[in-house]
Length: 490
Ligand code: NOJ
Image 1 (spheres, rainbow, N blue to C red):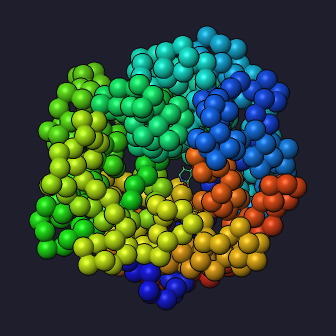
Image 2 (cartoon, rainbow, N blue to C red; image 1 turned 90 degrees about the vertical axis):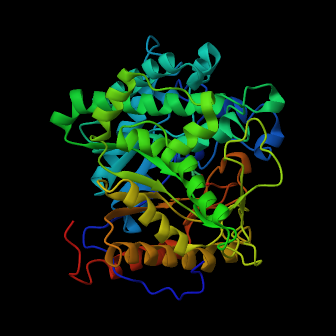
Image 3 (cartoon, helix red, strand yellow; image 1 turned 180 degrees about the vertical axis):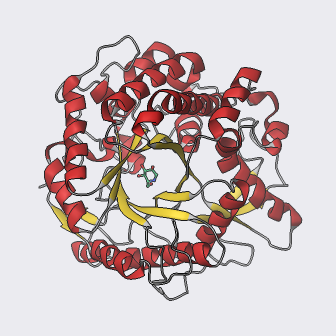
């Protein structure tokens, strides 16, 4: 919806920050070099080839050996910030709080952070982007044991703050807790691949995982605030993803309610405890009953205290869908949606937007603007940072399509216009934008198929070629910036 609009290159605030995002496992490669331990992705990608299109992150984009060149490319493309993640098992190969630290892994990230700063690029660092230590999975099932995971994550985070926090001023604890919970522990399409067919308890596990992530985020936020923020003066938060949902049938109150419920089950599941310091949304408590873990009074005290410390809402957003309340069949016993179906076409056969080369991703900038409004009215005290946004183009295996990636340029232009409208017409504070992704990379269960990069990667030679979208973003960010004084004061 909204995809028929022309790209208008609408203005953005003078201090709006622009950069790109990546994640360690998706680009680094060097999976067993210099003392790195195995993560759940190292293992998962080597179990059954069908899970990841026969591909893995062993080599990926070879970023581990190309730090200087990659950082220079960012600078040449006008980026002033870079969202990266740390590989936990490069830093603590076995992952646990009593396990040895790998100084060579720390040195790698020191080198990367220093290179960024030398090029005037501010690092924004995600502690956990899905590559948990395999040893912790084997020891206690990772997120399934809240107390153990929390203690190990606290130790890892404290080490990262103390070693990198003199230079890193933006921290993100977890990337997309919804995906970790549902795709990792219900659908089983992402590591560690838990699903009913493989014997997991999908009725309860995903909600336990979410609970662990929320409390571990809060615990680490408290540590940062108490022990590091006073001297390091940085900020910390979490990154939540989510589509926007339109009702499948606008004239049906059940579908109107379904769109709202779907947003709450997806986003407010994490957002309400983390940013509002309170229990899960009421619709989840009612529907999930005792499948949903309970916060103790101590937990709620921690959530209340830390909710005020999160200093931005990190938003990963790509697309929108229609929500339809299913009424003609009962939900499965592990249903995670309140019996709501997600569709890309509404009751009139209208599509939500043109399809990219990933089935779940269509161009729908109007939904993006609506989501910015939804988030900002639910969490009004927080500025929003777009921590990921981007798309793979149809036909992009053809190098000509990749180089002049019109589909992506149009997508990015429309989504940036949506941000501008949200800022200037709706009064929402959006502080910055990270395109996903700096370069084509390992797209998890889809392997190297979908190319999300604004830089093309030749997976045979590991050569990098900026696509036209990279130049479009460089130029439009300049042109849009501060062209009006209407609201450029943050
Ligand atoms: C979300 C994830 O954070 C990232 O790892 C992934 O590659 C992109 N979205 C695209 O699917």
